[in-house]
Length: 168
Image (tube, rainbow, N blue to C red; front, side, top):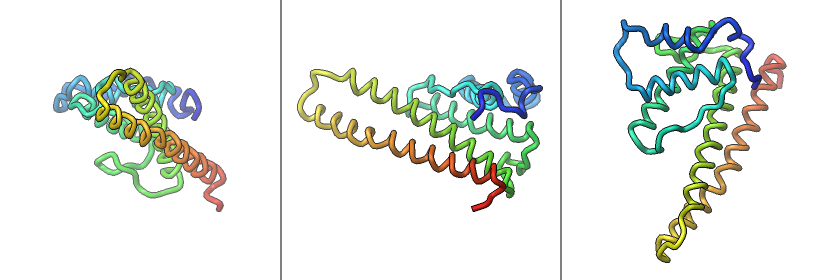
Protein backbone atom coordinates (compact mmCIF):
# COMPACT_ATOMS: atom_id res chain seq x y z
CA UNK A 1 0.00 0.00 0.00
CA UNK A 2 1.21 3.50 -0.76
CA UNK A 3 2.53 5.55 2.13
CA UNK A 4 -0.19 8.11 1.48
CA UNK A 5 -3.57 7.06 0.13
CA UNK A 6 -4.16 9.07 -3.05
CA UNK A 7 -7.83 9.68 -2.16
CA UNK A 8 -6.82 11.21 1.15
CA UNK A 9 -4.49 13.96 0.03
CA UNK A 10 -6.97 16.76 0.82
CA UNK A 11 -8.33 15.14 3.99
CA UNK A 12 -6.49 15.21 7.30
CA UNK A 13 -6.73 12.84 10.24
CA UNK A 14 -7.73 15.72 12.51
CA UNK A 15 -10.53 16.82 10.17
CA UNK A 16 -12.12 13.39 9.97
CA UNK A 17 -11.54 12.63 13.65
CA UNK A 18 -13.05 15.93 14.79
CA UNK A 19 -16.08 15.49 12.55
CA UNK A 20 -16.66 11.93 13.75
CA UNK A 21 -16.24 12.62 17.45
CA UNK A 22 -18.08 15.91 17.74
CA UNK A 23 -19.90 16.85 20.93
CA UNK A 24 -23.22 15.72 19.42
CA UNK A 25 -22.47 12.01 19.67
CA UNK A 26 -22.31 9.65 22.62
CA UNK A 27 -18.92 9.82 24.34
CA UNK A 28 -16.34 7.10 23.72
CA UNK A 29 -13.38 6.02 25.80
CA UNK A 30 -9.93 7.39 25.13
CA UNK A 31 -8.78 3.94 24.01
CA UNK A 32 -11.65 3.72 21.51
CA UNK A 33 -10.83 7.15 20.10
CA UNK A 34 -7.12 6.23 19.98
CA UNK A 35 -8.05 3.25 17.81
CA UNK A 36 -10.18 5.35 15.47
CA UNK A 37 -7.40 7.93 15.14
CA UNK A 38 -4.84 5.15 14.48
CA UNK A 39 -6.99 3.73 11.66
CA UNK A 40 -7.44 7.17 10.12
CA UNK A 41 -3.69 7.80 10.33
CA UNK A 42 -3.11 4.45 8.61
CA UNK A 43 -5.55 5.28 5.82
CA UNK A 44 -4.42 8.87 5.27
CA UNK A 45 -0.74 8.94 6.23
CA UNK A 46 0.24 5.29 5.89
CA UNK A 47 1.17 5.12 9.59
CA UNK A 48 1.39 1.61 11.01
CA UNK A 49 -1.15 0.66 13.64
CA UNK A 50 0.58 -0.49 16.81
CA UNK A 51 -0.87 -2.20 19.86
CA UNK A 52 -0.48 0.26 22.75
CA UNK A 53 -2.65 -1.74 25.16
CA UNK A 54 -2.12 -5.17 26.69
CA UNK A 55 -3.92 -7.78 24.60
CA UNK A 56 -6.90 -9.28 26.39
CA UNK A 57 -7.77 -6.15 28.35
CA UNK A 58 -10.83 -3.96 28.01
CA UNK A 59 -8.54 -1.17 26.81
CA UNK A 60 -7.21 -3.33 23.96
CA UNK A 61 -10.77 -4.35 23.03
CA UNK A 62 -11.89 -0.72 22.97
CA UNK A 63 -8.85 0.18 20.85
CA UNK A 64 -9.71 -2.60 18.35
CA UNK A 65 -13.33 -1.42 18.16
CA UNK A 66 -12.10 2.11 17.56
CA UNK A 67 -9.92 0.84 14.71
CA UNK A 68 -13.00 -0.70 13.09
CA UNK A 69 -14.87 2.60 13.36
CA UNK A 70 -11.87 4.50 12.01
CA UNK A 71 -11.87 2.32 8.89
CA UNK A 72 -15.63 2.89 8.49
CA UNK A 73 -15.15 6.65 8.91
CA UNK A 74 -12.52 6.54 6.18
CA UNK A 75 -14.76 4.55 3.83
CA UNK A 76 -17.61 7.03 4.27
CA UNK A 77 -15.30 10.03 3.80
CA UNK A 78 -13.65 8.59 0.69
CA UNK A 79 -16.98 8.03 -1.02
CA UNK A 80 -16.97 4.27 -0.68
CA UNK A 81 -20.55 2.95 -0.68
CA UNK A 82 -21.48 1.83 2.82
CA UNK A 83 -24.63 0.92 4.73
CA UNK A 84 -25.88 2.97 7.67
CA UNK A 85 -23.71 0.80 9.94
CA UNK A 86 -20.58 1.60 7.93
CA UNK A 87 -20.48 -1.84 6.29
CA UNK A 88 -19.64 -2.40 2.64
CA UNK A 89 -22.10 -2.92 -0.17
CA UNK A 90 -21.24 -4.82 -3.36
CA UNK A 91 -18.86 -3.96 -6.15
CA UNK A 92 -15.33 -4.56 -7.35
CA UNK A 93 -14.15 -1.31 -5.77
CA UNK A 94 -15.32 -2.62 -2.41
CA UNK A 95 -13.34 -5.83 -2.89
CA UNK A 96 -10.27 -3.67 -3.40
CA UNK A 97 -10.99 -1.87 -0.14
CA UNK A 98 -11.41 -5.18 1.64
CA UNK A 99 -8.01 -6.19 0.30
CA UNK A 100 -6.55 -3.06 1.89
CA UNK A 101 -8.26 -3.95 5.17
CA UNK A 102 -6.75 -7.46 4.98
CA UNK A 103 -3.33 -5.91 4.48
CA UNK A 104 -3.81 -3.77 7.58
CA UNK A 105 -4.90 -6.76 9.65
CA UNK A 106 -1.91 -8.82 8.47
CA UNK A 107 0.36 -5.96 9.55
CA UNK A 108 -1.36 -5.92 12.95
CA UNK A 109 -0.82 -9.69 13.30
CA UNK A 110 2.89 -9.21 12.72
CA UNK A 111 3.06 -6.47 15.38
CA UNK A 112 1.19 -8.58 17.93
CA UNK A 113 3.34 -11.63 17.25
CA UNK A 114 6.53 -9.63 17.63
CA UNK A 115 5.29 -8.46 21.04
CA UNK A 116 4.38 -12.04 21.98
CA UNK A 117 7.83 -13.33 21.02
CA UNK A 118 9.48 -10.57 23.06
CA UNK A 119 7.45 -11.63 26.10
CA UNK A 120 8.22 -15.31 25.55
CA UNK A 121 11.93 -14.63 25.13
CA UNK A 122 11.94 -12.74 28.43
CA UNK A 123 10.66 -15.80 30.32
CA UNK A 124 13.60 -17.61 31.87
CA UNK A 125 14.20 -19.86 34.87
CA UNK A 126 10.73 -21.38 34.76
CA UNK A 127 9.56 -24.52 36.48
CA UNK A 128 9.54 -27.51 34.07
CA UNK A 129 5.75 -27.45 33.72
CA UNK A 130 5.71 -23.74 32.95
CA UNK A 131 8.65 -24.10 30.57
CA UNK A 132 6.76 -26.80 28.67
CA UNK A 133 3.72 -24.51 28.39
CA UNK A 134 5.88 -21.63 27.13
CA UNK A 135 7.52 -23.96 24.59
CA UNK A 136 4.10 -25.05 23.32
CA UNK A 137 2.93 -21.44 23.03
CA UNK A 138 6.13 -20.55 21.20
CA UNK A 139 5.65 -23.49 18.83
CA UNK A 140 2.09 -22.52 17.93
CA UNK A 141 2.96 -18.84 17.67
CA UNK A 142 5.86 -19.66 15.33
CA UNK A 143 3.34 -20.94 12.76
CA UNK A 144 1.33 -17.71 12.91
CA UNK A 145 3.79 -15.54 10.89
CA UNK A 146 3.49 -18.02 8.01
CA UNK A 147 -0.29 -17.74 8.25
CA UNK A 148 0.02 -13.95 8.18
CA UNK A 149 2.27 -14.23 5.12
CA UNK A 150 -0.33 -16.39 3.37
CA UNK A 151 -2.99 -13.80 4.22
CA UNK A 152 -0.71 -11.15 2.72
CA UNK A 153 -0.23 -13.22 -0.45
CA UNK A 154 -4.00 -13.64 -0.76
CA UNK A 155 -4.47 -9.90 -0.28
CA UNK A 156 -1.90 -9.16 -2.99
CA UNK A 157 -3.65 -11.53 -5.38
CA UNK A 158 -7.02 -9.91 -4.69
CA UNK A 159 -5.55 -6.42 -5.15
CA UNK A 160 -3.97 -7.50 -8.46
CA UNK A 161 -7.30 -8.88 -9.70
CA UNK A 162 -9.07 -5.66 -8.74
CA UNK A 163 -6.41 -3.63 -10.56
CA UNK A 164 -7.02 -5.78 -13.65
CA UNK A 165 -10.75 -5.16 -13.41
CA UNK A 166 -11.57 -8.52 -11.88
CA UNK A 167 -10.25 -10.64 -14.73
CA UNK A 168 -9.40 -14.14 -13.59
